[in-house]
Length: 484
Ligand code: URA
Image 1 (spheres, rainbow, N blue to C red):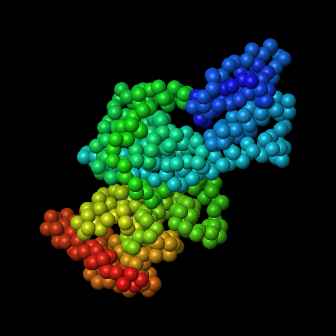
Image 2 (tube, protein in one colour):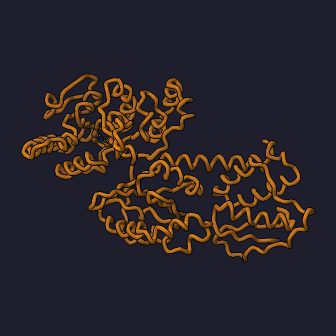
């Protein structure tokens, strides 16, 4: 019996090298045992080289290669043996893959599609935490637990989608990091490795500064071109987990917004409005909605936005804040209120003593509307039709979260919630009963504070904003109808 001790969980090149050796040596699938990394067995012993022409060569149809490259990321320990069995069988019958009822073929197909699903989930559910350092430089980190070994397959998507950001995705078996230029991988980590609050920022600065200094970068770039099995030996590969491991562990779920893949052109064309309506009929949870919103074509804003930005926060939140639409940074991060308006919002929430982690934060419109100007994307206010079209998603969020208090940040949010054109000045300062035991408060949009040119005006407007949030805080502290 030949034993193949693999060095990596999902390195197709490694498996193929070993499989070719076995084929050349004429080792049948029954004569080989495949071991995942960590298994306590001897190293792979090469069989005798096959005489030219007498042994199979290992040539396979491209369809097998495509499926095998996906299936190797499956978590089933039998995957390597299955691949080898099919490779072996393909030497005698190149049509094997066409027999859909064949057990091996069915298993391979299933494994490949499970991995694709897992990869899709990762695209939909990876949630980045933004970390801003003193110079205003922003980095992002996310923790994700895939069912299979889908990180390597999926990380290039994030590199393309968030090419202008520096980010890391940490999973239990491996981590990926992108410095804005190259993708590299290192050992896996733990949930607590991903920072949850400012207390760990210093660790992240240390980590990123080591990753992003030019000398390190060079090694990191080399590393991304090397076979997986060598990465573990490089010092950079050990940085992600250990450097941040000493940091305080935070238990809260990281981020409630998906950094999701916008629908491909093909999907967009397929997903006509009627189909979306049919699909959204099946939305039972906020997570369903979070996926479905990525295919939204209810208005044309999806065409230029990076992705839809769904709400963020606990499903059981008592309070929901509704802004206007994601801005430039939100569009890239897939999270609401993480840019400059978010900073104003966070600061005001802190002054009011409202914990952002306990409220649900969303927007009236889920796609970023902008006008390109050179390299910049200038915010444009959504029109009534766009607000109306997106109300579908806001209603879904309200029906799932069922907040007792809704706070409209700005006129667009108030217009969406009240279904008519309104002004903030006419409505602010007093609760508005909305039905279903929900109370609405209307206040200014945080970015309004950023646009006030004079200091005295800013002070005055901030005081009014603070007073509005103080009312919200009071309402939060009142017992609800079922609590009283
Ligand atoms: N402005 C908004 O209204 N929402 C955001 O998420 C960011 C800026």
